[in-house]
Length: 356
Image 1 (cartoon, one colour):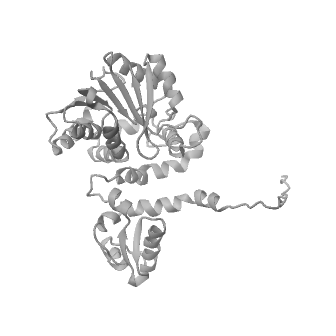
Image 2 (tube, one colour):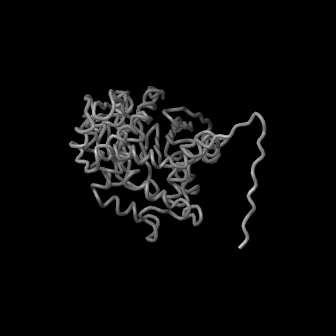
Image 3 (tube, rainbow, N blue to C red):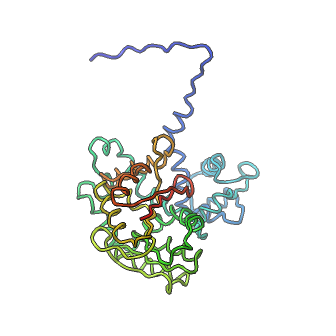
């Protein structure tokens, strides 16, 4: 067996090489698990509006490891910016950082830990097979070896897992829905249908912001009880109608505005075009299609999260992928939409607005 000859790189005066970013990303799963463990243990909910010592946290969370390793874990969360601390070790008092207190306290409407819980319970182990996904082009989730749709078929028959999945989806989109409700001019429209609306989070936020609007939440029949329950919590049953159906098979509900939040990225290109065409055919002459996704920048250099979400679609669905504005414009123009614009929402997410 022949071995490559290693050569030392020439040192160029005035240049400096730094491996810290390579190590930070290459070992990034350490930081992920530190945070995901905190979410799983409900640490940020325990610390909401109070300060605790490490020994108290150890007792409340029923941690059996040494107190020193509890401090290691808590102080890592401090160094990562998720906790604040006064004092050191036995004298330390721990509190949530402002962002952790807002987004990771399970008792707040702003909680987005659902997607982190699902990431810990499902995606973390599936991403361990990214190499196999790239080599084979096949999904690496629960459907592996059993047909691509087994996970979703089983999901919709298990109320507990379905609720976890819906919490994750609404959690990751909640702030985007709030931003869309605030930024888009809904005053010109009276009806909206959210296709693949899950637990009706988007309909709820839009209706709360715009009292004149009536909405339809459209998703599979198994999801209807979850949506109805959440709508009732906001006393919006008289303004939000829940309709069960399969958006790939059944006609879409008629409305002046059709929305799709993280729906198209879960489809292959042919089905993306099919659903965009269905929306165009369903909308009235002055209708609008709004898609909310982690739209990848056209140059495919900036939106790392969107690009990794596309890899997540490979792991989940095989042929599905996230896309750029240019990609979407090609499909939308082909369907007949006359004008398009993009609206930044929060973080890596944007809304593409297509006018019929």
